[in-house]
Length: 207
Length: 119
Image (cartoon, rainbow over all chains, first blue to last red; front, side, top):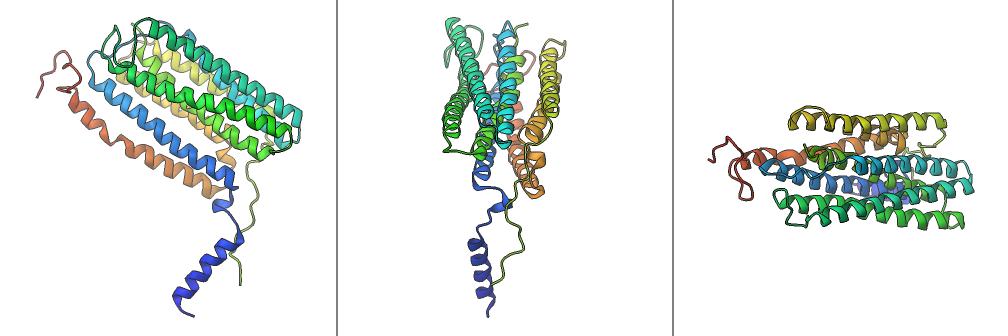
């Protein structure tokens, strides 16, 4: 048998055994690959933001209070814990408990989104748009709304996913692994916020 | 035909750790998040403040990744893949910073900072 035949046979063996890469379930592998790609997306946004902030002389510092950012951070971090409790309950076979924690997590996400929108409206009310603001370079609005908007989009998508997966888990169509995959996404959204808060909010506190 | 010497999937992350461990990690992350707010009000220049905030954010993210997302409990090969691959991609993105500093003195969209002379 030639070397080429042996190679082909090896590939065929790998394909027919059905063992996924790293022995990780396909859904979990898919969400981790998505998380890696999304981490690169957010990192690119934050690097671009840092690039602009570093290059602009009159970068605005419009945030007079940390109360809203602190409250949003607390809610999102706490929602990560409740998500974990939900997955833990699901893995232990406690279906009502898992559903309850998942819904609590989704409610946390909704409160976070509402606080975020309220903050946006406040800034817009002070005269901030995508390309203009009363405090300094107009690029601040574009970068602020892009980064926080992308994150808000992720939170909104996460809330929808939590509700959909939670309801279907309760109905028996999805299992604990599906809830775990959704939980991984939610933790990632929380993880991104850990970088958005210091660099977009706290470095731009009014002094 | 012999099959490869690979065991069928057996999930590594089982979520069976005691509840107290997760709560302790949550409290640690909250403390680190609070530290960032303290740093924001300290009398530091922007570069020093940024460096401290980045360090704290990386610590927070590490805790969330390892324990909330259970990366620490996954298979070693997968753990190495995620950390090395993601780390490489994120580090490779940092190539543009020198250009950012060059633009401090003559960027088309910014005014030269006080005391700097455009080249």
